[in-house]
Amino acid sequence: MEIKEILDLVKSEKINFIDLKVVDLWGRWRHVTLARTSFSEKTFTDGVGFDASNLGYAKVTNSDMILIPDPSTAFIEYIGEDKVLSIICDVYDSVTGKPSLQDPRSIMKRTLELISDIADEVYLGPEYEFHIFEDVKYNISNNDISVKIDSGEGFWNAQNRGEYFIGKKRGYHRIPPFDTLMEVRNKIVNRLLSYGVPVKYHHHEVGSCQVEIELGFLDALKAADYTLLVKYVARQIAKEYGLVVTFMPKPLYDEAGNGMHIHQYLVKNSKNIFNGDKIYNLSNYALSYIAGLLKHAKSVMAFTNPSTNSYRRLVPGFEAPTNAVFALANRTAAIRIPAYVKNPEKRRIEFRTIDSTGNPYLAFSAMILAGIDGIKQNLDPTAEGFGPFEGDAYKEKVKPLASSLSEACYALKQDNEYLETFPKELIKHWVKEKLKEEIEINAVPHPKEFENYFDV
Image 1 (cartoon, rainbow, N blue to C red):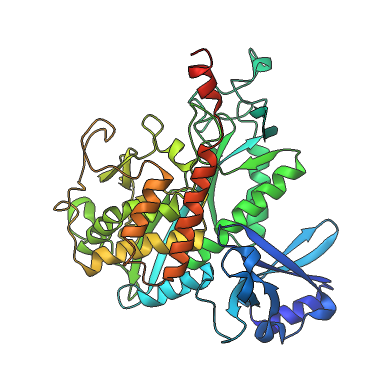
Image 2: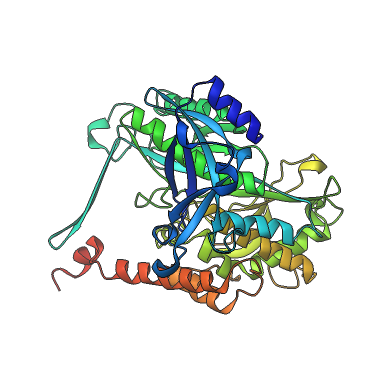
């Protein structure tokens, strides 16, 4: 929408609240809600001041920043009985009046500007995997470290033996009544469609209570915006049904985990430059992009897989990658080339390592910059030892991906020159905080330790 359209809409639809949404450093949406009387054309130029230290990317001693709404992101939602106009914001420096160097959304914008000599557009097609449970309770105290998950669909729910439930690894594309979550997914998708989100399809995934929603191809900035919107809507709808949603990569032991596979290709002069006459009908651009992404994979993972839980998903046996290889139609590879794609205009690669625990603006930017670095260096993935690979990557001796959050963070400390749009201060802060997370988690006794060592 244009600014005038928004102002006219607020007036004609008698909208009383304008909700300004902004992402924090870690990838969660925050918001502040303006009354209609405080909203005008000047809001789009003067913005709204806020304390950025609470969002993770400013020091308390210099934390005054400004939210500037992006009118192109406006959509109408209902909160209770109120019609609310929501707008995604960029963060501006209150002193310079320019976009903040620390703002994740601005980092993505700078990334797309930086690579414009190579690609006019970066198109991303995200797949969102997540779990929908009936109830989740967790506690950490001196004498109680526990998690209890409940769902009628789970085979691990003893009350469901002989009823409709989904057995271990038997949920993929199951139909009702075994798929108990179709109605919920329908409502999530209907809500997204009403906001203009181009949903491709949805279905039940491999695990009990596990589902997937896949979007059509979007420009990279919109893909990041919509990633936060999908998570927001999924949780809102689940709450209406008395359910809870988690995008954690591995909420259930010995069950399939949640990734956020990203299909992607580059466009220059209205042509898909990943299409070519090399292996798998890829171009040299595509192959070099693959090489760059796999060469920097460990450091990229500090942003694409930035939780300790991420690495519980990246284990053999659950269609999750553990090695830095590319292959045709192979779900054990970090990068899969979809074999079913016949349209040259949609020639693409799929990065399978990434999950939803990060900040999408930072994760997508890191992924893109790594690939672009491969193009700039004219890297050859075969010469680099990344494939093409045939067979089970779990069983072969190939270059591994990071196996822990700390390994990814230490890789980022050593390998970050390709992240040209990321301030060094942000990278340093990210590594420090993520390593602190791992230390805190490692300090908590684990139930498995009691099983192994209690009677020693």
